[in-house]
Image (cartoon, one colour):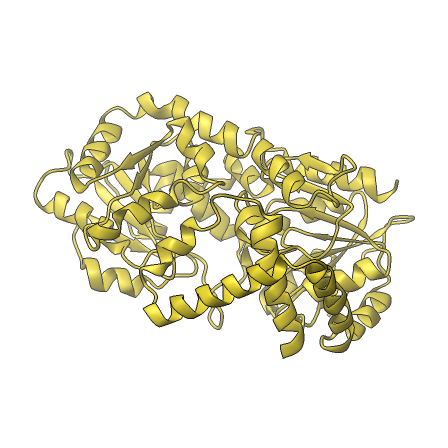
Length: 473
């Protein structure tokens, strides 16, 4: 399985791929090839993905499939208690309950009651002198006694690496390995995958030598949440490496090719892109696509445009088809999806070209509280975000609150995302943006500047350069 490409005198840098989006970030951005100019990348994948492994090996990379972190019940109990500590004492965010309150509307009362009692109990205990310190002592002991930590230490030794790089340090499937690498004194680098990860993911148990983030907001979040680990000037704003593909025309296929690939008729009609969210987060979201289709039927949307629905990678397109139905101007499209676990699949260069072309060749983009607002803004397209709920109007304010989460506020503050607070406003925004798209270009630019900082397609280079500077220091 392994073919080692040795660079004379270079350090061995282990690079972890633990779910699909890591492939996009590390491989399809060209980062692994750039890293090979400064180190010897050793690729570690946490699941068996034969096509990807073969491609990496054919590219001359050394590849290992490493076991996921294994944790016993006692250790998991301690980590749960540390998660309470993290939420209440380390995260220090007034926004952390927004999504919880929103999702509570779909939970049975008994489940919410039991959860709240547990949270109150653990929060109360965390106020006792010495309690948190004892938790960390127990966690360290159970790390050695109730996980596969010793196996991971042996694996680190076998790999003969100098450093580790991961975009997903919050992933449970890799955190025991990260602890083992840190224990062995390896240099630790992370470039946080997304702009919401620091505030919406759990505790990162490893102190990294270098942190790289998207923007000034993430910079401040890292300093606030991990003050001990980030006190030495080791946090860097590099932008979003996975967005580099959006600023390179070679990632686009021809418009006719793209239409044939997605099943869109070869005509000159304008195209509305609806990028769906995951059903687990937005179970009522199908209503917005249905409202658009009904507006087409009723001739409320001018110019008879097409609607391209892009299903989220971890969602099922069938739920949308069942709720919305068919229409001559509606095209359903799917994205990369794993067969056994939706988030575990190979994202190919063809997938990237299709995504880039979809964003480039559609005219207006609609999504609910999604990073896709940033993706679409990279192509200077108008962005619309539905924030009403006709299915459950009494809880509509909870959906609107989702747009006020800490990571999302900078997007809303740009004015680049049109928040539709009713079905009528959604349709009005669609008509306005289709008719006068140029009026929204500057707003799209502001979203890009605020969230990914750089629109030069060189975030991958910045990431690699910082790794190089610190790897040989």
